Image 1 (cartoon, rainbow, N blue to C red):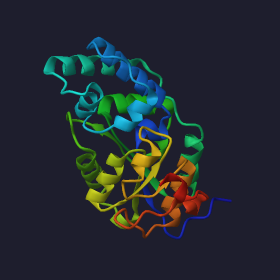
Image 2 (image 1 turned 90 degrees about the vertical axis):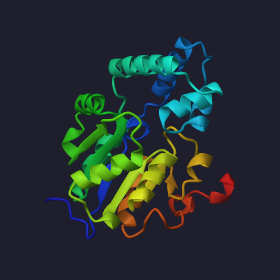
Image 3 (image 1 turned 135 degrees about the vertical axis):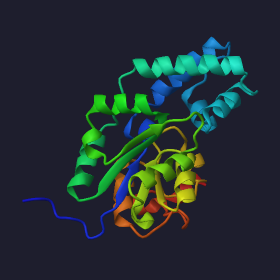
Amino acid sequence: MSPAQPVHPVHIVWDWNGTLLDDLDRMVDAVNRCREAIGEPRVDVATYRQEHCLPIRLFHGRLCGRPVTDSEWATVQRIFAERMAARLPPVRTGAAALLLRMAEQGHTQSLLSLTADAQLRREVAQTHLDIFFRRIDGRHEPSTPKSEALRSHLAALGEPERRRVVLIGDTTDDAEAARTCGVRAVLHTGGFEPLEKLRTAGAPVVDSLTAAAQLAVEHPSRTSEQPTIPDVVLGRSTRRHR
């Protein structure tokens, strides 16, 4: 018997790094290799998460406590690209099963990342997750903001009804992109930014991809402009974090 179809199917736009991939430690290592190459000390995971922002050049400047020079930036870009090209993408535990479950329930899914498009497509092919996505889009131009990338992604998907679209990601930038494009966002805490930072984004914050997907499909009429759905919905007291 085929799975029952949902009454209100949604379209989920998944983020890649820090969301479907559990790659925080590898990203920190890559950033530290870049920092060593420009004569800067290593940073720990907590510092990476607290200072994380986009665009990435600004992020490196925050870590350095000063602007990154053009020559330093060229070095950072080269070394980071080398580290990314050499890695095997670490899929988050349970992500493949979750994508399958969403598809079986009749929801549609796509993938949007600011990873360079060619690199993103190589990584997705390595994971064999590409079968779940109606569309895969990476970054084509340097410093493209996530909001612009999302707008183009939705246009390429044929402009799905915005109130049925939800972006699942791990950063405040994901929430801002969703808000700019008039779609919902759900953030999870297992990625590149800490809980206290995510809770400033004005979007629901949960502690797993499963919880994020559950919230996405159970509240299809809510938008990212509405007040954050309290973490207590998923069994967590919000007062502990304030």
